Image (tube, rainbow, N blue to C red):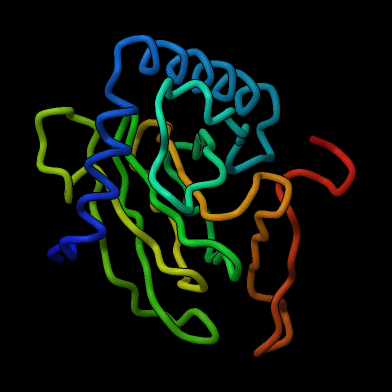
Length: 182
């Protein structure tokens, strides 16, 4: 799917920031640490950690208030989730997967596939995806863990994750950082 010109400009700035050698090295360390956490807890499908925006060494685009590294377990489906209070811009950092999306009140069986890869020479739209506020998404992983770098339009402690509840039409909400921690 083509990227709108204004969104492409944001992704290009983020891509340049993430592409710096020192940033790549630090994000790689974070990803490795999170993979160790996943290895230690076989029941978890993913592990995450916020990253201070100062790591990027320059101004981030207006509206970007937090950055994260997520590691999603190989050979799994992360399950449907959405962020009702944030636009998410996500980059495939190590590995590859299908980051499926859809818009609507409840996730349905049919998803739009977005196969993302981590090769720096691949086109921007093959490495990055912008997920609108409230859009459902799920990662379908291949044979290796998938490390992604994510940027959000809310502070780390305010990022809300919603997942479908067992009762149709309802959702369960949580924050990635428990209230009171930072």
